Length: 254
Ligand code: PGA
Image (cartoon, rainbow, N blue to C red; front, side):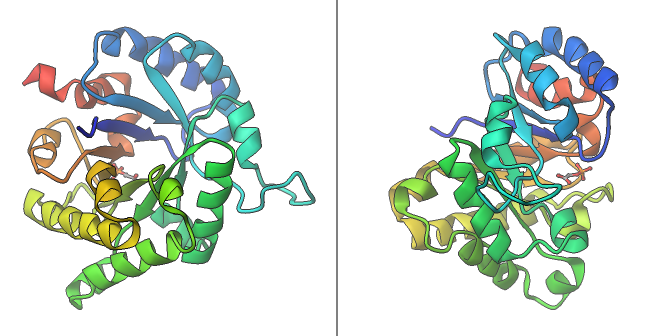
């Protein structure tokens, strides 16, 4: 059984007071939610204080990126996996399309970051997804296959078992135009078949594959009904406690 994950990616939103207010409002709304793992990914600056506020709760903490280098070392501006773990994060988003598009992230750096994260005991959420022109050119699966192969290069099977994959078609992120359940379902099945090729069937059966891109309270249920969709990575709709709680509780609320 793959326990669903609902993860909120806050991107570059929320000061520390705003982040603490969010957590205070969210906690009672999800205190009885047992159907999924609940993860929030605030900016680096809020991690430690939020982790203290989350102690004893059912909400877990992710960072939005990690240094490729293990460190410690001379890497001005970077934050190592060990530092994230020290700040209370247990998960980390790696290879988000915004980082690939605007901050020179490559499959090679994704691969190094995944290795650093796993060594520090963090659970990597590895993002993959094609751009609109790639889908229009019929290359969506080829692009995602290449990102998966590059990002997982040289990982052992036991390292592979630690990875969460997030399929986030770039054209669906922040556009209000989520992938249809059919498109998402097809790509998720494809991703699972690739994980099977890379790490074998037992890992493929267990790997949780999240969908991301304009997930909202009104479309999460149909997406989550697809057999290979094991959760959601959510940007915009994760920023308000009420809408994030609706995503977490989508089954209970039905
Ligand atoms: P969105 O972002 O939900 O605002 O589309 C998703 C993401 O970037 O992870």
